[in-house]
Length: 289
Image 1 (cartoon, rainbow, N blue to C red):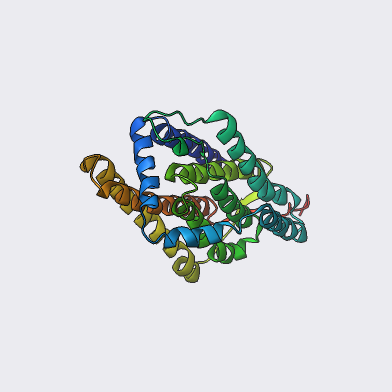
Image 2 (cartoon, rainbow, N blue to C red; image 1 turned 135 degrees about the vertical axis):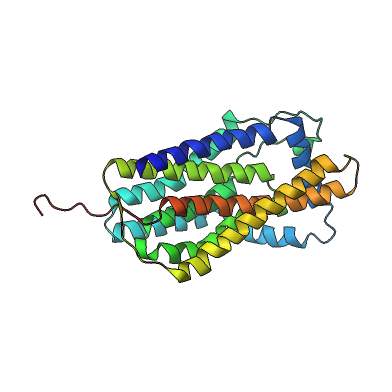
């Protein structure tokens, strides 16, 4: 178990570097993401943007504090102190790293002579980091038998936050994908520390068809549709159409929107797969029993 978690953390970190390199450090990637933002601005109704802004406005320091307080209450009520540290640490470490990477480590050079308004660095997305880290923290801290319920209640909301930030024009698709991978890397690395201490154990479990129907199936649908359709639209808008075609921004925006949602759903499924039939921070048996 520990080896899988450590490998997943390393893999997520490498993919994060790859996303940054492909979309931020290349002219092709920058042109496509600029087209995404242009497509959003050309939306005549901006209905999606207005709805996204209303939802994103609720993600504040106060709401973040309330979410962390819920994680603390659940963990402390269960008397799982190490697990509480891991769950809350997933939120805190993810946010700290996101801000440090954005401000100091991962600059956005201007490779395509973009307008001034497009030059600000926003990789990785702080809002997506908040939503996904809270979801992952909750997934870790709740009792094993309630994991599916907790994910079912929060997952689709959290996984669409990245798409909402693209719709609102706050972030580029790579910002949200980078945030997803960052949170996955942190959650897996911290959970691997639990495994080192012997608190992560396999558990026998029966099939749970309701969890598969109401949690896994919707996430799989979002992941497959988002990543598949987003990739097709990315290729069409960037490589199959001439740069001056008026359809390019519209297709790029649609592709970026669904890619953001698909990536968030995919990393959630990865974490659930890693934790399948795994109980976290189970009490140690007394010696001699």
